[in-house]
Length: 275
Ligand SMILES: [Zn+2]
Image (tube, rainbow, N blue to C red; front, side, top):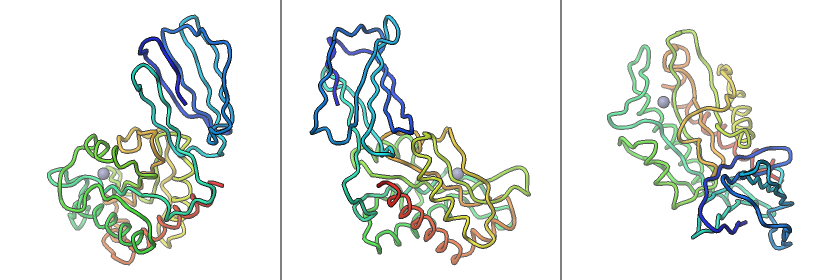
């Protein structure tokens, strides 16, 4: 969808759910349009409406044809503001999608430290990321590994690296840590409520692992890797390196294999839920 403007203006946008809607606000503008053209060929869009909500604010509401948000990008092409919405093909399978995998920290950015073993978060996030990468490739799913060695990469650079590759979904692995030694369990995080279903499907699967308690499904989380609206994303804080029982799990290779298998199953259930 695009909006013709006589000059570039400031705007903001956000996603709403039930029904899935993208709201776009343009500032310091007065609309001189009194009709709207709805194209049947714009199959991802159910309805577009707009109104002048304040004397200098125009709000457009773009209701999607699909029930769930899969992401959107917005930007100027010349003076036209263009909104590119990801829509789902009729029968999407996980192997039609590209999954970006992020191993948190790396290089001089070591992250948390194991309370007993002294192991570093950066080394174990990489083990989880590599295990998920191996499993997805075996299942025929395309993947992008943000890092596959012990290198320090800024979170901003991680996002810039992904931009031209446009993944369909992102999974970021971190290990939790708390000053409270009894804090333990697994958790998934989202920034945008519209992307919460992915994080719920993954957490539901993780909680089937014996001996892994729930820390929660946590929203509005201000972590850079889950900021983009371009694609759904999920931060997985596997367990706490600051808790002795959780640390034992993290150090166990069988646990790591089981965990990534559950992330894979969460992805499968989420894809199925898109219909
Ligand atoms: Zn971390």
